Length: 308
Image (tube, rainbow, N blue to C red; front, side):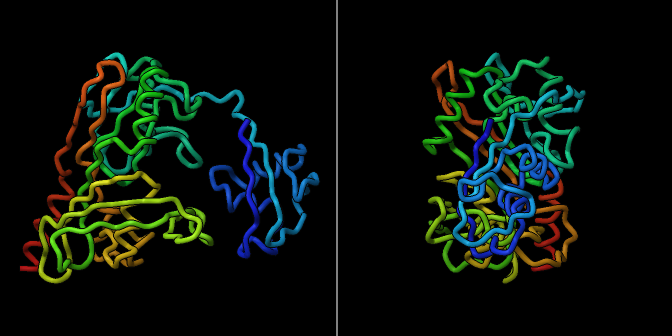
């Protein structure tokens, strides 16, 4: 059972209770929220809520999300580019477009479906039946290295390293604009966007600390740059939010950058090139890398040619 609790903000004022919950908790559909409310699983200012109750700013909203019942994720024979594997972990080079785990609109064809088949079901269960083995995520259209865990001991070890920010994570990105300095550091607080709940945003008051170091690798005329980003923290959409916040959104990122993409890309140009951590049982540092994908290299060649 998952319990969520939040204070309604100004943007929630005037919404029905079911919509306010669905907007602030986008992992579940509004229809499912309605079922929870109708079964007595939601409270508005400590009183049992009704779907039609109108929310005011400052209201306390509490919801109990029941665990999924009778739901299983099917193993699927999905080709995986396995970089490393042992009894504890499996490291995969993820292609563009592959969703990490089942969610609304993506019941099948995910990395988890492929891992269940490849590992014969031997994945850690800490994250439940929808996200077995998953200790961290990268976006659907981000390519590169991701690690999954085959048992709970390995999962707890890596989860602690992610929590302590001791994991090495380096990304490549193509961004709009050029830089005066060859490197820089971005420190902000990041939280859920106050109005668009699928987005994250810099929030200097209520956000969580996030730090990204970047280095300019190549600049294309005065319009575009190829950069490397090294994460000190791992907030959702961190690189995308940070680069957009300083006026350098990622090419193809129509969520945080220009709505019109001149290159007609499928999502942001972001690649998880390096991932390093202490092995959960061997106790030694291991680091894995991934070459830039073909589409990324082809775009670099195009930028060199057109911006020369």
